Image 1 (cartoon, rainbow, N blue to C red):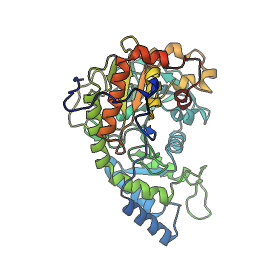
Image 2 (tube, helix red, strand yellow):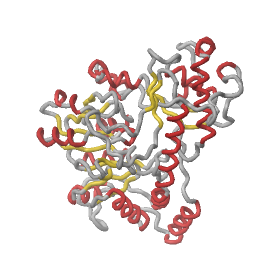
Image 3 (tube, rainbow, N blue to C red):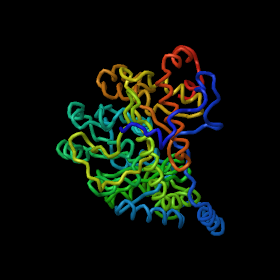
Image 4 (cartoon, rainbow, N blue to C red):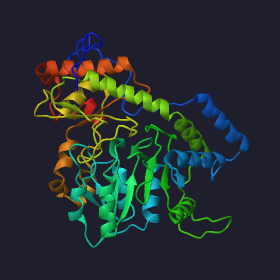
Length: 428
């Protein structure tokens, strides 16, 4: 990172830090993942159309249009829209016939593991690569047992897994390869849109995602039979009126959700442009901050790959690593400082799925096999971005972090001791 230019930025908060008794920098909380609002007029026009048609669910025209738009975006044969990303993942897992054990990273949102455990499939946690936070193919081979049926790779932060390495292992060992692409809408790997890899890829359209449908999800695949099976499964197994041919649940996406999804997908280029600008502002503003590394989207998708500048990224997350050995303040102390300023920075995926229930009880020694996951979970910090965050807010946040580092001794003495509750700890 380059050192900030004092002439072109305001690296210092003009009043004392809130942790030291000053007024918060922001009157209202500034969140990680605040929802993006696309073209309101277009959204309301679509909703009015649904109201006029009185077709609110059951594969309506807006859901069909949304699936078609996603097929074009992802360049796949099939997209099956669902009510949320977790249900989409559960249906994909069941439709693919996974059972026994499935290898997943622990450094992911807990829904990735829950989608397996909910169906009495054992998630086997693999470690991640330290530079990328992605599942480490080198760790997978030793986790395969006679009960293993699949691998789920997670495109964390929208950066693609080492698809080729995972596919080689899956093909050679007769395993199914599925991807959790919840972070990766609008991203590519070797020029191809994420969504085209493995047996299927699962997307989330939760309100916090760069393409959102209030709530929603989808599975993308080029497998005709798999797509047909998932369409049955999302609608109770119905294949026409009064004809149930398969075991299914209610996983359908509503017309209202599809209206938002379509409008948000159309807004994706603007959102990505804003996210990228914000990332560059953070890159500039955090320069010279000791012990802090900004995870760079221009870095290769895996430690051994060569980055292609043509790759698309959605820049949805601003991810910091705080090295406690070099930073004047720990990651958690920085969270306390930012929370006092009404900046709701987040420890993402902390403390790792293996340290959450029921996995903490089921696998009490898992942490011993996941040293990189434990290290990364202890130092990752996410900062607010998206179209609701502008240059002034980013300059202020960077200024807070620089000032906290410069006044670290005073700040540390003012923060509550670790055993005492605080607003930041309740948020975390």
